[in-house]
Length: 465
Image 1 (cartoon, one colour):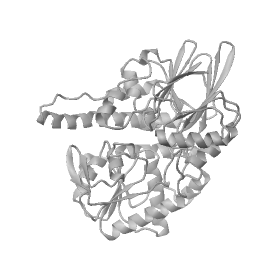
Image 2 (cartoon, one colour):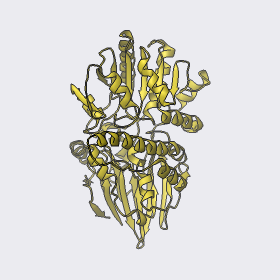
Image 3 (cartoon, one colour):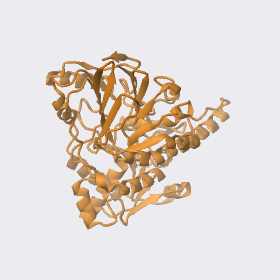
């Protein structure tokens, strides 16, 4: 029984791990690495093993850094099933096709620039057609319903409370007369997060736990502080008749923002100004949310009782679909809020909104999520005076604000509390999906908590249980 770590090993993106036992090779997640273009170009075209040799894929949730490279896997020969929760399967239907379109559009735009410089064209990582060819491989499974992806392996999903459909899993694997119990956290959510239920508890002895560590060295501020800061930024930008540009992940974060803006308008804490969600994917995902109310928490269900249209629909909210509608926002005066993907400012319509608005001091860019190193979002967060967008240099005159209390990831205190039942019950704890200095800090605390074997694997490390 072996575990090999490949993606999200001492980095935060590109989740990809492999379980080897008997004649099976089971991949946990297959996400996109998001970072410098040349590095991403190489990393996203390689896999932990040959796609033809993968027996099954188990997907923790539909975020791009966990699911976004599945079309490449299929394109290069994977023929098996992709097991995930029913809600994650529904979201992947939109997310992967959208990602394929973005891959095609971005490489077309870049190649126009390269052609002017006499450089050869680049090839898209995958296309929308590749994404559509991936969808028949999905098989949706409910929480708490054990399933058998390959012989001698039983897996159960539990609610991770991170985004709609997110799961942590426990796998029971039989090999050579022994049963191994392996846990995989995926991305762990937070208690009292809007819309969704809290993460379920984990229990029972494990031979190994693969644990995310994104915020392993920090504590989030209370969500109420984040909402107050959001209201303050809206009020300040509105008073300047400016545009509030919010780069946001289309799944989870965008829905949380819309929910809080809805509540803040209802309470009178912010003015009733137009809100534009400029992401067709976000619109589609919001519709998926409405079809899975069975996983909403009690507070949201009560809110729906007073707002029958649901938490993600109200008068001031406008979902932008077409490119022409998106471009029209450039000529429309503020105040307004524009929520657009992607969350790290690397692809999609957010780049056009930033290029058109970042030079106006009336405007605000609000960063509401973790930003990977070398991404445009990280450069904005660092308040660099100039940034490159589409190969052109822009001076940053707009205010850049940051809120970290809206994170859908558990912080170090929440992760330690969640892991506490495994103290003395976990043979080996592997930390993935985090930056090295963060992981070292988190590992030290976990050892102090009583975990005897905590390891931070490097890319390509393989461990025998």
